[in-house]
Image (cartoon, rainbow, N blue to C red; front, side, top):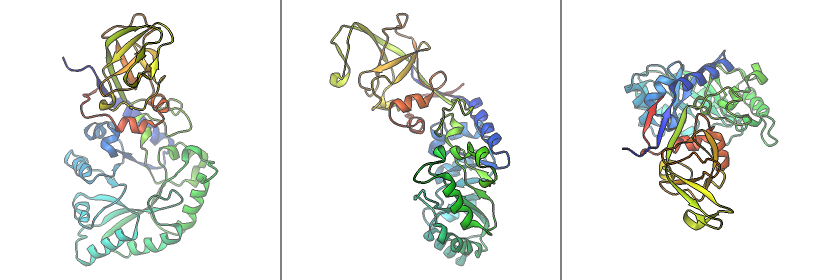
Length: 366
């Protein structure tokens, strides 16, 4: 028999969450963000789960090519653009849409134009740095960058893009969303082209900001996978979990007061208790730093992690679950146990848990 851990991907939930994104921004087209192997869900499953998306967006060139090989004919956006002049050949051949965020990329495009290598128009997303301070042109430099791109015959449509740092906290004291909007609209005034501003958190601000957002394209990411972008729970946003990680109890120990559990003997029982051993550890993608009290479901009942997470096993408190035994079903996250609850207990975010799912974990659909 195989080890009992398995990740189940729910395509119906993926379809539901995409429909939720579209309903929040009905005037906009939607890029389904599928970077990091579709947040650990798999590109092949993403193609079916997000078949209704207007395009797919990611950062990895090899996976973008794979999407074409799998039959995706609609637009593909490379969110970090191209990393080397030689990438432009692939972009032209596969009709990729790429972000442009620095002068070097414009220079590579100009050189490719002079060499006659832009043999078909490239649609591009010109990125503005409105305060996130990762990628993009400053508002002051944005107009000149746009003019240089517009002067190239090998450049097709230019979408004007920025990225919100704090859309989950629109009134953030250091960089409120409204200030990023102000900078973006001031710098793009009079420039032609579609606009793309909102990530998942921004999409949920659509009703609040309305026409100020002016999205022609939105870029839902974590919301597509049933995780919260912040501010409220995923369920409060009307999202459904798309990945359920399950396993089983493979051993039970009865311990006495003062007995310790796991490496480092960090957990000490303050009374008699039953401890269940679950076939799941950090080599499966479960967070090693998850502390005492991290929630786990055993036979549908919520209990807690005790002891340190090891490579292949975790230990959980079965004291209040007298019916639990070897073979009892365990949910690590997903349907019945929001991934964000586990992530919050572990001091991380649901994104990381999804993306960290290990290759050794079997993945099924259901």
